[in-house]
Length: 445
Ligand SMILES: Cc1cc2nc3c(=O)[nH]c(=O)nc-3n(C[C@H](O)[C@H](O)[C@H](O)COP(=O)(O)OP(=O)(O)OC[C@H]3O[C@@H](n4cnc5c(N)ncnc54)[C@H](O)[C@@H]3O)c2cc1C
Image (cartoon, rainbow, N blue to C red):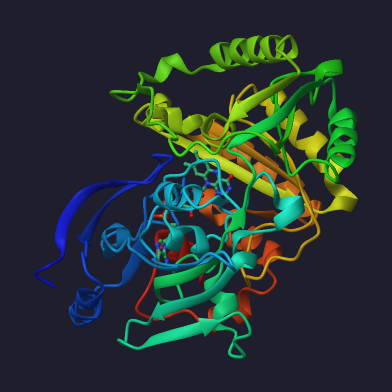
């Protein structure tokens, strides 16, 4: 217990929760088990933590112990013939990419930031712009070493008959501490992406573009102007791309070009500034060059170019709200959500719309399912913001959809259980020595 350091200011990425924790940061694998056992014998509930890029509260464990895994970041083995890499769970995607690119490989699935760890990405079974091609990250994980808080380390394979592998992929860090994992990397032809940017006038055009693009483009995603109304409702910018066949493989991704030094004052982001930004962005992108060759970093990780970008939401932070709704209700539900947001005037400027493909996710609590996902950032304005998200919950529930725990800061028990029918099965695998703010608010039905 003496190795755990008291910290009173650990903040979720979205900034809506700041809490006290006892933190320990092992540098070597052989320290980890004794630290976990020491924490448990001091009656501390524990939670592994990566680079803390989860927006909401699933990565925090207020008043409990956080095991910062980022020091356990070594590559263990790589097989060039199969692309299978074995690494400690605290390695960042930035480091994995650097290693992979020098060998002509890339990640099979990547989120919109490279500052996540392998363990954190497995625990949320993350998805990327190529979900319709590759599904979630969990489909590419070939094995996991899991440390339970009783000190046992279990090696899990994809055909694990106990169900613990399926509970751990997307398991929010609650089934044990992932110490290392095997991931299958994919060969790429270039770090340059041949891309197309297309403005769409409404949601019908978005769904037509998505359907048309999925066969020919590995990566698809759209930005949507969530404050547009009337005939402009659902307008946005569709981006699609493939690795260039003949481009270079550039090893250098570059660091952030700007830094937000301190939290912005609350008045900077208001309904007028966000509406003006959205209108300008739509106009600007509608007039941009339609076809362009874009390097890997700005294509996949535009926000990584601005260090601490989350501070633009000020001290009160922001909620991210990400839903997924099934194909049969996706058009109606997406329209209703955008109507509710534009009517409230509380929209965000980082609004992402994407269709998920039909490849099944391997985790009991994996978020992606076939249909459409909408991700929105809402500056935290207290009760009005919460009320708007309650309204969105009603639409998601009626549509038979679900919310993404990695992004969540206020999910209700009702919407969690409606969206995750395998939760009772998952609960059988939860390690009783682990917990999180998310789990504390959800686990009692
Ligand atoms: C700019 C930005 C863009 C994003 N884009 C996407 C996207 O496109 N798609 C997507 O799916 N997500 C996206 N995310 C969310 C992000 O990918 C996930 O939250 C990811 O899991 C964060 O990884 P992390 O290492 O920061 O983990 P943390 O946030 O530190 O932890 C996440 C979860 O993993 C658990 N965990 C961490 N390490 C371990 C371990 N070793 N063993 C067991 N459990 C562990 C934690 O307990 C927690 O429950 C984005 C986030 C940001 C900030």
